[in-house]
Length: 300
Image (cartoon, rainbow, N blue to C red; front, side):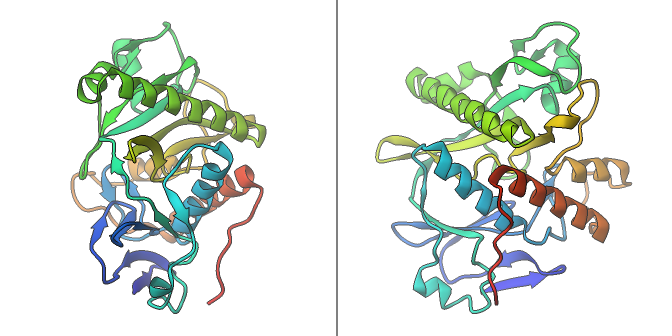
């Protein structure tokens, strides 16, 4: 069962299986597998907004499936087809296109963050210290400048609140040098190849975060990959260092909230319809430019 509201944005799902709810995804335990549903919830500044972005979950799922396919890296997806027992609970097909059945992997307790350009918390860190997460950088770099080499800057995973940036040495101490090094090298490889592919289609991947898990003693890619929720996407032709960039991600929403009177310490206000629609269009543009395909929406 599911609940649609806010102009057909899917905000909640309720299925008769053990459930873990994240900011965006509802994950159900099916025994030997997991059912991962991407809702239309959207978060910013560690808060989930009261209204969602229609079709956002389908956009994230369709784009992740595209990347999982072309990257050729072992991942957690088994199928995007709903099992009959789940489909029977979803007569209006609200879960179709936003659900995947996955392997049960043990999640690595670190976000693998890769930064190719100087923005966000990395830019703020650089302004204060001349470094990003303890990694020294050349002087006088501009906001949104391309970094000499992509940086790997892990962060601890937080169930609630904000992930905390940590050094690679902290990751090594927790996971061991071999696992930490493998995560670093493989994450940088995903970023470089994904950014090269996206750039050919007019999008710069400024940064991204990846999640990995252990499955049968192997590290596999899990969760989502190279989406507007987990990455900064900039139109390549408009990129100009020295200030904020136009984007195909939720930076537009963050900037609206920065301009608003919301104090970021109390529950956020409902998003205006035009902000919802403009955010949706940016996500759609990212999907269409990268995959060359429109969003697939099932018929009721």
